[in-house]
Image 1 (tube, rainbow, N blue to C red):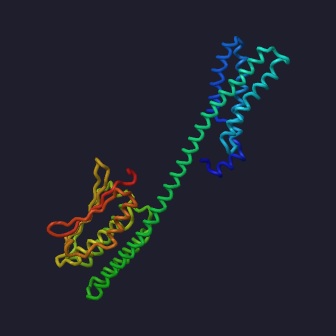
Image 2: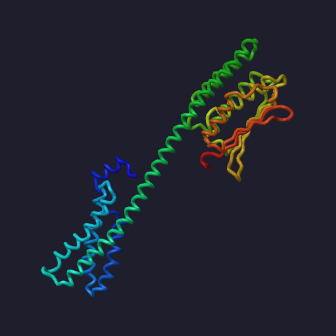
Image 3: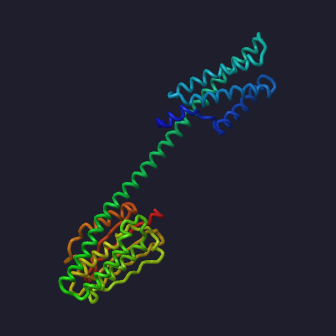
Length: 347
């Protein structure tokens, strides 16, 4: 489960024992020394030094063998080091030839060191494998999250590129209609359109757009449309102030307003009113934004095109699959479009 680059790096730079490993060796050494000193009636300090020397050598062997590719080789290295470390202690501290009982004692110490070293190594290898698997799993999750964020950003850019020309061409078509009919409002509307585009264009690709910037565009657009048909369009924009700082996909709410003008107000002889609102549910934390119009309504208006589909897809890409776009018919006529989502900070 080890990543090859990490394995290569560890081969060049063998790991050193960690403080936790030193502490484990110290605890095992103290307990084993106390037991052996009690059984042999020997000095505790002398036994402690011997067991401690063996424990240190076994720990250094385990960490140094971390460069080996096979785990069983690390276990074999520790098992072989136990009798060698015991033999080294015997040759350094005991006279030769030694008493038979003393030799038997060191043989038993070698066997005991091999058994305890084997058990400790098996536990350490298991814990190490779990740590490697956990680290690999976390790294894979981070990479997956990064790829998902990049994919979401790419989808948002693609959908936004589809919406921006849709909005711009529809607005220019409205201007062209004024010019063709010889309306005196054509000149002022065109000037307001130029001013609007100067304010809007820097924000079209703003990845950090907020609901406040979106509401500024909505108001500017509605003011522009009101100048084009002052007797047929009334509007209001009332969104709770605490929602203005929320991150929000650029042009999404504006697309709904533009659809309300194009499919609701424009086809109606009497015109109508557009209401933009928003509030948050304190209990659930979900936010609701809506655009309602009292125009011609769904039965006679054109079928929703790519605008609403793109807004729904962008909203879900931005806030997650729990985000919704609902379309309802108003009584006696008109359309109500509502966006509901959980803000990203609370998701």
